Length: 424
Ligand code: AMP
Ligand code: GLY
Image (cartoon, rainbow, N blue to C red; front, side, top):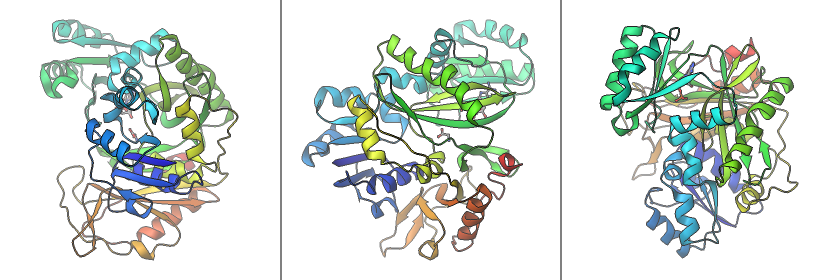
């Protein structure tokens, strides 16, 4: 098959790495890709949001399947657009209506309520109901959770200790703190527990497969302190997500989600990302995303022992049939090397050395580019996702840290405590 993968981050690097290994892959293009994805296919300078340009490319190169890495094109309706314009091309991802599970937190909460899927108690407010929002806040226990309804580049969730400040922030959000994304705000109960990420591939006709479970690390500082980032690392498996926990996830969350989509006639042939929290052994949904996670994908792909292209093709065509999705018994760990200063301002264009010396890990590029002389340069906050397999999580982590020791760029930072909380 000829495949076009949309996106440019570490997640897309890991997907490209996996797609490139498939016997079904004849040619892989990555748009726009990054300084590392060209090892697995051909980078194409296209914006995934420019649907007309994507269409022209798909026609020109006779692409058979589009894999959408990030949420923006899905929320903007790329599935529906391609379905109208090029109905014979497979698209891995939900329809625009299905992408609302991520694109609108209010929609996601309504959907969960409708399908009795366990999640935090909530109400939604707009500028017209801000006073009621403050009243509702006063019925909850601190800390208070405020979520912008729309996409806000991962920054739209505030967790606030004081009631007075929460009420003030609610009003600020409603008057444009995140632009149109916070014209509606979901106020919800705070859930206390440890989080994990469950990824499901569904064919939209009732069948699904569960990928290896992962846990990501969002904060910049060790011990989960400091500002939120796009993700500082991930591990898989997650010891607390054992067979008993996963059975609850299947019966209480995955199956009601799939039934709920079909009850609403929502077309959804792609990945569903369940952001879960373990509250005293009971899984509850923190959020839905409509694509794979980053940096979880970098760890998860190392543990997928089946041909992902065959699975994605079957899902996008609407019938997973009896295809298996086997999980490697090994553990995997991804540690992100980021630019000094990130997630605040940081320099770009620093020369990266040593990646070629790494033997024990796979170094997925996230924010890299090539200089005119071929040098590998930093081009983003999150630069490299150093990913390893091991017989245990401890061994996988040791390999990633060892590999990081061989890589250098000015200002490089990483967290040394990735995975420590789940190994206790
Ligand atoms: P989200 O953008 O929905 O993933 O939220 C960002 C982060 O905020 C989540 O990964 C959680 O760590 C945290 N969070 C969101 N909602 C809640 C909640 N109801 N209770 C506790 N933590 C939450
Ligand atoms: N790692 C969380 C996300 O991809 O949204």
